[in-house]
Amino acid sequence: ASSGLNEFLQRARLDAASLRNEGPNAIIEKPQITRSDDQGQPQYLLQAQRITFIERDDRSLLERPVIVSLTTAKPRTVLQADRAEVSDQQNRVELLGNVVIQKDPFKSQPAARIDTSRATVLIREELVTTDAPVNVQRGLSTLQGIGMRFDQKTQRVDIISESRMIVPKEQKK
Image (cartoon, rainbow, N blue to C red; front, side):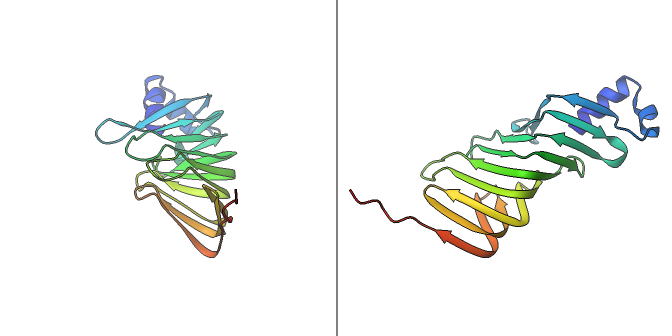
């Protein structure tokens, strides 16, 4: 998001003037941004109600962000939250408030849903972490605990501490 915005601001000759101001460089309403990998293949789609871009701090503030994975080699994953802060050259996304991560079923794996209050997404590393309480619903099973590491490359979810799994008994016919 930031590099495309930088180019837009430079072409409009707004970049130098806006860096001196205390406010944001730009505010974009209802954006849809597609990020591609090194081979030019779509990797993620980012949507939000609003992005406030603050170049001098290398930050973008997002309201109601939704990040959708677009790779076909892994299950479609959707991350959403009340708000987010993007930094570190668009690699680090801090999701805050009502964070939900949903994974579609893939091959023999059932759908999964992860709920927490905050999470850090490292885009290039394809990693999601949190130190907050988490609730993971996978099929009919539920896993709860404190802290999580979700490696999107391997599709592995690890609960850091105080983990508790709830597996319902099979229903009798």
